Image (cartoon, rainbow, N blue to C red):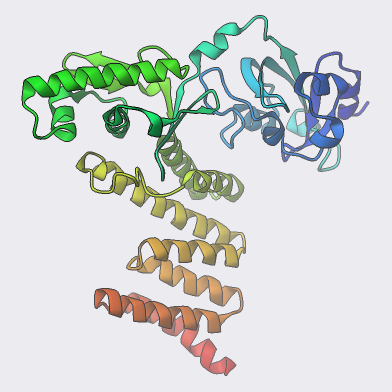
Length: 389
């Protein structure tokens, strides 16, 4: 019996996936549970169909999925409760169990099933799942909030300083911020008494808005004379971004290019712009913004190395150009760009990029290329371009 036959014979909602986590079989019970027909599900990535979340609200269907990692190594995996998105957009509470072929027992051709995933509707048993959905905070680019997939209309809040309080607490995630610092940043001209009254009212308003949106209780804790945003009660895109970059760099150091690229591309998808770009002059987020700027450049450097090692020279060149747009003086990216374009067989493009970059460096900063960059240009580009002409 083939692995996929188990799906058809299963009484529970079930589907099978191959090594790339693409659905290769989908039974009628799964269609009843989630609304997708076999024709719609088969061929799609598992995560694109399920769009599932842990009970904490953290995405289950991401590159960091525990199930993906376990099944890839031939280990069984289960989850007592999660939320899976129905085709209609509603969330279905479900438990998950798996039947996974050990790696050394996989004799079917590549592309065939390596695991069967069984789902069990627990909507009547797990009403508490919805009560632990955390606040999702988006800080990369435009600031935004969401709870259980629903965006909160922050711009419609009557007390505009409430959003500012939350932004400050996010930039100090998991660390208490003394009320005097908050008052200083929010109302620099107010005396201590008036500032404290304003802050109490503003924090109360903020807590009320988060509760009304479905957030957990005490997401903002009072710690002595300070306030703290609980790390365990929120998901923050910048936090996930930095974790993915770190994981990608570790995989790259181990020469695991596929896993490194997956982490890097997931991190790139989270980067929608500079950290809290709607607060460009705020000192309270300047340190975190600069830190994430460096993390972004580390991401781009890692992506460029990974693509180049895989022979994807145009993709590596794209990443280098993106990095130079963000930091034109980071010459390591210019050198990598030249090398990738030459490896792609276009030293003429490399020469044109080099000339354009030199002009911009001189016009905007009054600088000249370093000796190392000049040497790389001469070794990689100048000789080949002259020979080609």
